[in-house]
Image (cartoon, rainbow, N blue to C red; front, side):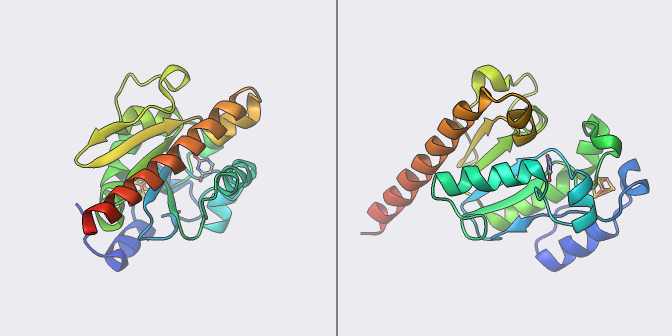
Length: 195
Ligand code: URA
Ligand code: SF4
């Protein structure tokens, strides 16, 4: 079911029992940031800190994400909205399973419809495989842009992966620079049209 207002969406998610992840969560994590942001960032699922605080990307990965955003001049509060493929923490931070992602996908669809972002950024393989293409390879396809329904989709490395693999850091910085440039381009062409 697709929700067309935030109150109903928040209510539905906070009491959702559509998949087994409801049994082990402390609380649901819907998302954070600007609900009118031009960029929607999508991770995998809440980790331990996120489950405790009810806010996405607040652990070590989140701190790296904050740094990346700051580095390219994007504000976490104003320019982006951050969420995950699943809104409940998978036990021991395992990957969310395909049936769990499917059970949760309408919440992400609702968020996308409400936010109407210009660019959707998949953070890591899980989001990229579900949102861009099932055989997506982050190592070779990160930083590429794909258009679907007038929205641009792209993927970069997951912050947790960058923490484990320092050589990915530079590539991820470059992807964020390209995302910011793409956004500036889109905003400039919109202004051009209005004149
Ligand atoms: N990793 C994710 O994919 N999402 C979070 O919210 C935190 C860590
Ligand atoms: Fe519901 Fe999504 Fe949580 Fe599963 S992960 S219980 S579908 S909110």
